Image (tube, rainbow, N blue to C red; front, side, top):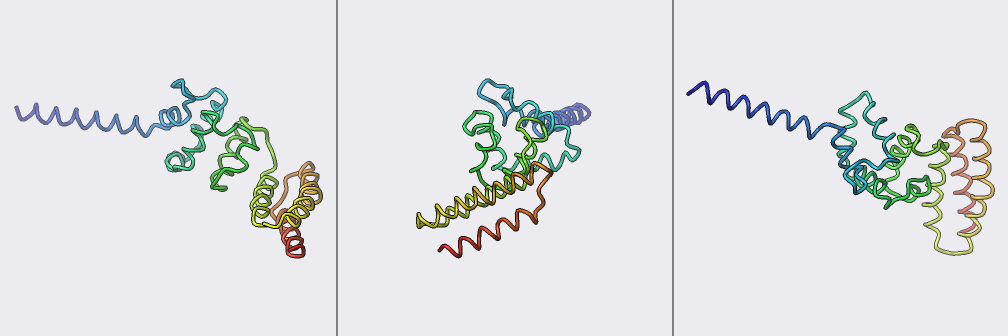
Length: 182
């Protein structure tokens, strides 16, 4: 009788261990998060799943997939609540999580490759312009930033990746122009 209890307990512990392994399995977790409503991963996001499963740091991936912002963004992309485009991700928050997700989407080929520093500058510019309430300076600064700064950064990005110093300089010039206008 004593051996039977011990055997049952071992079977129970083994079942619990297998169940825990199943729940922490990244493929299972990704399938649940990226469900497009059909019970399957949205086909457009399948390359992202492959990229995430190939990451060499499984603990890091597991922690990232537990982040509620990551889960929300991935679910919204899977269900098309957020369009699967660079513009669709442009206004999402928090920006660091979005930047990391965008990098993964570009690395997996889901989104076309775009210069990361240029995207971060555009994000910064949107937030900077939102702080200017007076319509006239807002419009002038937006025109300056769009037609001068962003255009120059795009031309440079076509030749090679932008560095932080280039976008930092554009931010400083935009900030100085804003201070002059206000």
